[in-house]
Image (cartoon, rainbow, N blue to C red; front, top):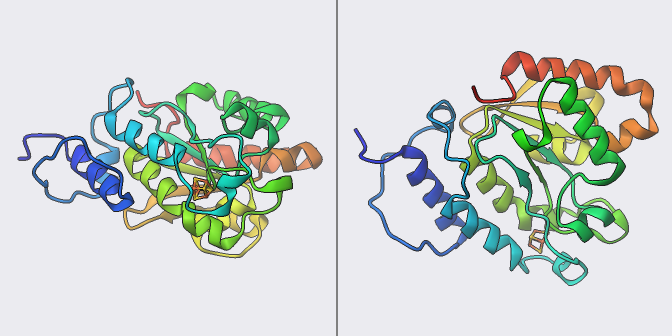
Length: 234
Ligand code: SF4
């Protein structure tokens, strides 16, 4: 049996792949599946060094042109022991100013949606496909998504969530590698990555603010997500 948690080896591999400096070298442990790690003991709530290194790499990133227009990067927020990871599109103006995803009216609606299933915002982890705001809130460009993809993949692997909730078309299409609309992607459980992390698609809260009649479908999506995994690790 490995003398240390398998998740630590996996986390370091992720960071090596990103070119993030590791402050200490450890022997390489046997590869274990994300699914197996996801059911392992939850990591401590305190900030983990691997997370800190990844956060620093994102903060200093200049991989794509969006670094020129950002106020700051928006890494993500929430519990590093979260069972649910929520993935949105990209920072908007308020997110760019505050450095946190899903703030403002859309963020408040997301918080309400989470409360509806009995979970606080601080109990999930929230991130975006892009860590920097596209000017004028335009859609992310493929080259920007490609440049930023390693960071989100690293976040997912470090967190090893039991469920990914993809909110909105951009998140869903990029996570699933499909170009179908949200209406065709929601309503079923997908699998992300080689480990097959369950992934449920729902509408972006900004869309729900414009189309409140769709909130019923979003509620159905959350119930589907609940049926896959409890949002809070017991
Ligand atoms: S969007 Fe992503 S890849 Fe582009 S500069 Fe920001 S952190 Fe780097």
